[in-house]
Image 1: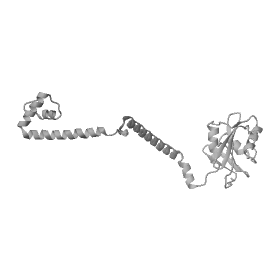
Image 2: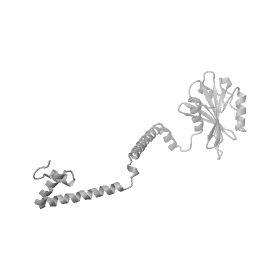
Image 3: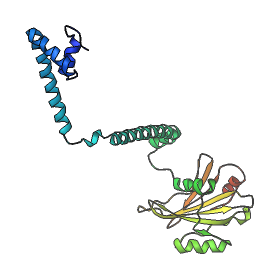
Image 4: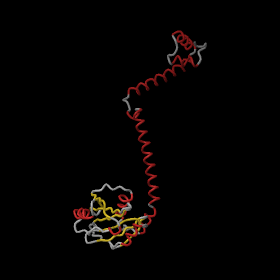
Length: 249
């Protein structure tokens, strides 16, 4: 029920067609008697009509796929995934920067690559971590030599470490920037490992002088023949290190 005279709330209800018939007639009689109020109400009606037309035109526009709730949720998931990926990359960069800081400094001081880095990396992967999906497992030493000759013609003979208690047990073909390579894993009865590594010297025939170097807990003894570079890799300390230090390759 409206008040007498109609309140502003009643007048807005009249503009919104929210009054019943008797209430509507009561407001119209009041507006006829009060032209100044009628002018204000007519302005409200005009604004309301413009708003309805604008809303109707909006509803008639084609649907915007970008406003679909499923699409919005999908974009949010992609953004979340990108944020996690960015955080992971930053963490990896910090970790690599911390772990590789010393090596980066050495490389800056000496831009030439250190000899037989790939041999050390292969030993860490196949000998230390036990990841050796072998291309060949041997029954005796001569079998391994036949396998080597098949892939590396004119290469030096495999080192004979039998006096030190080591024999070749498995091998794996690898690839390098210089071409095909291989790692041969030696093992003694105690389950300790040494590895023999062979690869071509590359297009510039980069042969190595005989030498030895340490990288972390590993030692690599390296040399070159006419067609290949070689390395024997094992722990820098302990019984296996004595084999590297006493056996001449």
